[in-house]
Amino acid sequence: MNKNATHNHQETIRSARKALLNDETILGLTETFKVLSDPTRLKIVLALSREEMCVLDIARLLGVTESAISHQLRMLKTLRLVKHRKEGKMVFYSLDDEHIEDLIRVATRHISE
Image (cartoon, rainbow, N blue to C red; front, top):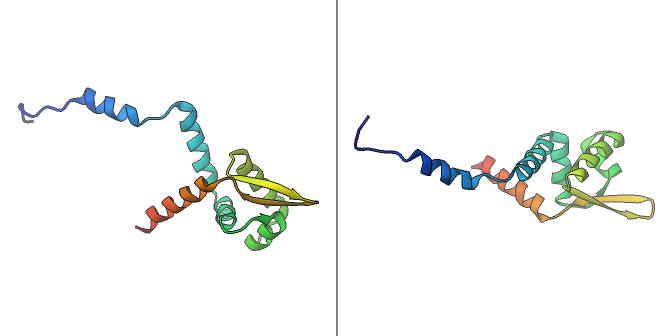
């Protein structure tokens, strides 16, 4: 090791510490990525990025039971990835906001490069 070359470990650690988020934000990010790691939930999010849909339409699109789709939508709703609105007896789902689309778009671009 070159005695003249020094590395300031404390400065490196101090700089990296600034990139760390608070524990609540880290937990939220972890849960979001965990939920999106399921192929069915990711397909639901991708479909809803194009079109507001009801449970029946999502189930038919993905070839999954309505019960299974409802379960997945509950999880997505809990993390505020999707929202719903009622029209009579029908419930329609859509993405909660444009940030979810941005997240998917950035991840897709990362995979494609």
